[in-house]
Length: 225
Image (cartoon, rainbow, N blue to C red):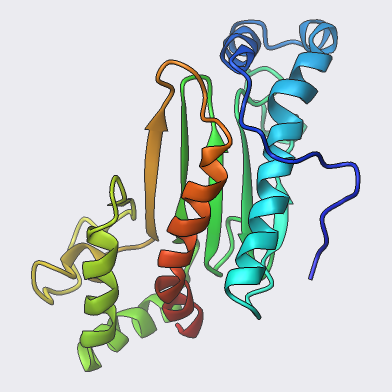
């Protein structure tokens, strides 16, 4: 299991200056502006995201031994090969927790992202190939009960919604409860929180710990697929 780097401070929430920094970066997406505001980037965004990611990983390992999620934190720099006329910096930051420590793989990942006026977190799996999606639908066809129990619990989680992309032409109809899940190309659930008016504080760590533990049955189900 990865261990928290010694230089990472305790998570104390995101400072209210974060909003000004991210909006400023969005409208001044160029290297001179970023370098002039790099201290704000570290203090308001980078360090809090690191602290949240590593301490969440530690808590999940304590609550669910054996999960051993690896941490992957995104970079503020965009891939220079994919700028397509945009500035060199992302106007948000995210991290993922999972067995591979990479978000867009065919393995389930917990994730968190923060933007200028909102944040989101959840669990999902992307880029599933045709064979994996066939196994997914077959598992539902053969025995829908396990996933049905999981989905009913997920539906009771406050603010959590299904985020998966579905096929334009349905693959089948297992009933209302599992319809979107069965016809999904990507399987994901998550919650969006809006700054009210300030960014989230230290309570976010507790919120995400409890939510991610509640989503553990879905994580394990996806791992089997």
